[in-house]
Length: 168
Image (tube, rainbow, N blue to C red):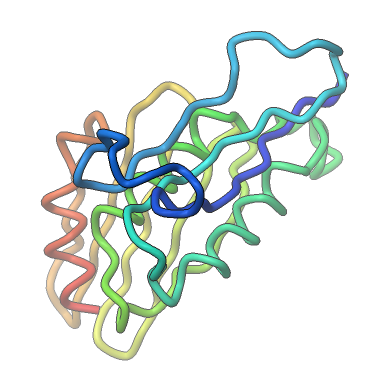
């Protein structure tokens, strides 16, 4: 019974009419609560105002879709299928913290169904675990300084992650 999220990117300005009242920030449209068949893909759309998407978005979308398509037991050690909420949370976090010149993280599946975003550069290391529970765990390490750990709901850690990403 494989269910996965297909992350698509769409513009608010493409065929939707200028009078449509869209929010000013990018938004994720969640997957439908129920699908017509148990094996049907659940689609998550990223709606971004305007026709210009961030340069990194297509590669991030493809990486998140690849994680979403992993079946249960993808690691042969009873790993859970990647959770739709974790994929959505990772996409929302990236939209909140990334700039056009920010290096793209490495996208890694987590056995509990979460998504791990990793940045490893000569300047610093940042690991962000977006968990199926809605919580996010962040570890940032720069130089010889002790690692900084932050944990909480995504909206609680977004400003810390943005500050860390700016130091990458």
